[in-house]
Length: 129
Image 1 (cartoon, rainbow, N blue to C red):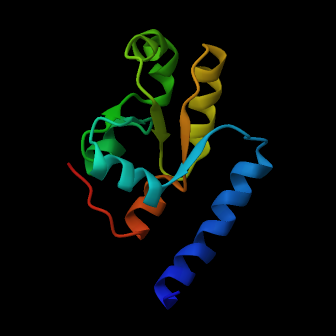
Image 2: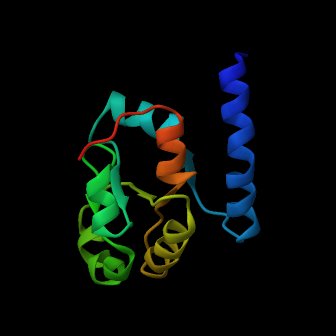
C-alpha cells in the first residue's frame, strides 16, 4: 500500500466514525466506489448534491443534481419517480445525513457518500462548475 493511500485511509477514519456516531446504518459509498461506478456508467446513480447553490456552483461532481437541503422534501416525489439509485453528497456529511433522513421517511433508500466533497477533492477527483 502506498503512503498516499495510507494517508487517504487515515483521513477517512474520522468521517466514517462521524457517520457511525450519528446512528447512520444505511447504505453508503466511499468516493472511490462512487467514482468507479460513475466512470463505468454515468447513469448508474443519480448524484444529489444537497449543498447550497453557491457552494455547488464553486465545484461539484460532473452530472450531479443540486437540490439544496431545504428543498429536499419537495423534491422527494420527483426523485422517487425516477426509479434510480440515489447517492447524496454535501461538503462533509452533515447535510447529507439530514437529507437522507428525510428521503428515507418518504420510502427511498439513498446512499450516503462518506466524506462528501471534501473527500472527493482530497482524492484528486475532478469537479465541474
